[in-house]
Image (tube, rainbow, N blue to C red; front, side):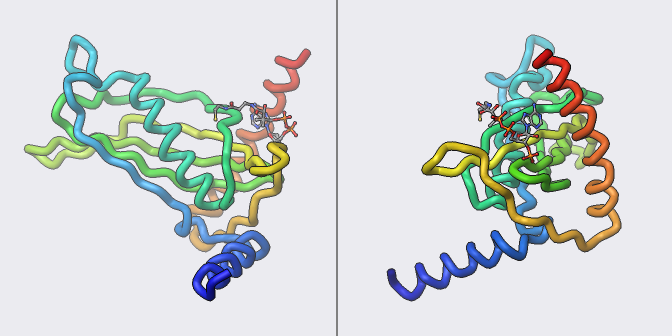
Length: 175
Ligand SMILES: CC(C)(COP(=O)(O)OP(=O)(O)OC[C@H]1O[C@@H](n2cnc3c(N)ncnc32)[C@H](O)[C@@H]1OP(=O)(O)O)[C@@H](O)C(=O)NCCC(=O)NCCS
């Protein structure tokens, strides 16, 4: 292994043990809303928003876990304001909390009007991912999350309540 590859591998191992800052995996995505992604009223399709939510959340999850991730669940998702044709749709994702092999990512979606600069929050979503070992294809542990800010600590606390609801729902579904 070359020196550069060895240094990268050592850094990855250190992250897996010591954990990563929330900011290290925070991810963003943006695109202009084009006609192919809108409904007959010129509003961005909800399904397209959900697709982007899954992608940006997966980026944050994989960056944190340094692993392949699969989507285990998507919590309640609402659309408070429409995103119009020609506006920019922006998504921000960050890891809220890690559990054992799973983690929760929070995603906020905003619209920006190019002509007025007005920004609106349109959607909030919470997505749970499970880290999958590339060889065994079984769930594997995720690295710790290092919290720095009061906001990150608040998100961490709130994620525990959502996990309880999720797992209770999963149990009920299993019967
Ligand atoms: C998600 C999946 C890996 C869980 O597998 P499983 O055999 O049920 O695994 P386990 O019971 O050991 O649970 C593994 C983790 O998943 C979590 N989990 C499983 N189902 C969940 C759900 N519906 N919501 C939230 N977390 C869930 C468990 O809490 C556990 O997390 P923890 O280790 O942090 O406590 C499996 O159900 C799967 O592969 N689903 C399909 C995923 C997929 O195809 N997604 C879309 C494309 S990426």
